[in-house]
Length: 195
Length: 426
Image 1 (tube, rainbow over the protein chains, first blue to last red):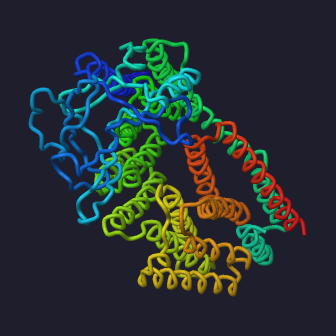
Image 2: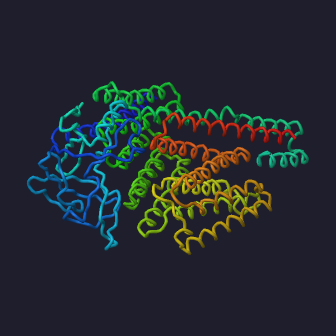
Image 3: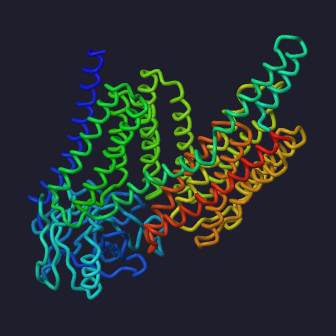
């Protein structure tokens, strides 16, 4: 009985350690991204007021969430669910705009002054003259939700709806993005703490 | 009167006549069986459904923001809770309480999943949700394998199925091939732990795979995915109807009818549930004028109609039960569009089928159908929870709806139970 209890206890400890390690890896991966990722600033746009608020978070819809492929160089053939690499570059206004769009993995290293942002195609709006090409795509970058308590969320929504809300993202070399801070009309009003 | 009692009464009369059993003994046996049936009271049903609701109340805690705590404090709470649950498991094992031990293991699996969600919330992670579900499933499998937890293995099967379907419903790709090795790995653990009932859960989760594949293939070939799922649901009804039509002791399927009926109904429930997950407009074969789909629907519905009619003829199904099965298999064909009526009709078919499954299981003493119905009720509640949170509806509205549903079900079962008792008394 005693041997059995010790074996069972060890099995539980091993299970707990593996699960704790998995959770710690999630946290450390995020902390590393926030600490070392390249900072970019993105403009947001108002979204349908009926779906503005879910629970206690703000939906972030970026200007670059919809890409007009007819006016951007790069790939045009995408399907819903495809991964996509978007090269973005800094503008004089301080925000970052798309420079070109590519199939995931086709950009070996971004040119100087550009940053690679990886997303996933949500919808392809077909082009009039081709069944396979997209005229526009909507893309999710994995940083579309900002969890915050209710009053603060409502306040941020008001700022966003006046088109003054800008989101600072930390972007890793492989294009993964994390929300790092918030700007209201060019003034940094929030920094995401690591712990 | 439940079928087992009817058969036992007939057999006991026969045995008493042959002198194998005394009349007093036969009476005592019948009384014991009747009292066993009554033990499944309304209080039990409400308690089971109440427990499901309580589990979901934990989910609301997850979705609430922790306003006044730093990230470090939140992480400390999560890790402490996870380790405390394993402490509780060990304590329950030492004190010789296997059921408390198993419940605590299931709680630890839930806490691991809750921690993944809360860390995602804390760090605004909005990436691929399927990855989070996969991590949760692997955590459940680890608990199942190392701590020999059956409930954790059952959770792993369900979570792997959820993972496989997530991206197919969200993005229509990639194809859910990776579910098969994950399923196989969990099966190896079930085999290793020698847990025979686990094969049922394994088969139920495996049924979800053709549904996901149907969605994937439909999306790739511009077929209406919802209608392919309806076809699978109708196929499930056909299997169940075939089982009901042969529910006689002399049937060649004798001994196999109950699992066959349960698997058929499970397939139908899963396919209708999958249809509820479609985010875009639901298009029917009629909308798209796709001949083969419409013909396939017709053949399957006619097949179900023929089998349930035969079941009524041979008295293995009541006319009302046959009508419900036929309506449930035919109604989803007529769904079209993305508006409230289509969604409401689909939800109505789903909830109606769940209520019928539980009530049929109760009336005919079929535990497999009862358990299936309760599980489906839990999954449907989870679905309503996410749907209502996904709109402007408040969580309170969810509980109001769930409460009304619960009350309605309890009332329905009370009536059923009353009828069943009256029949027995007559």
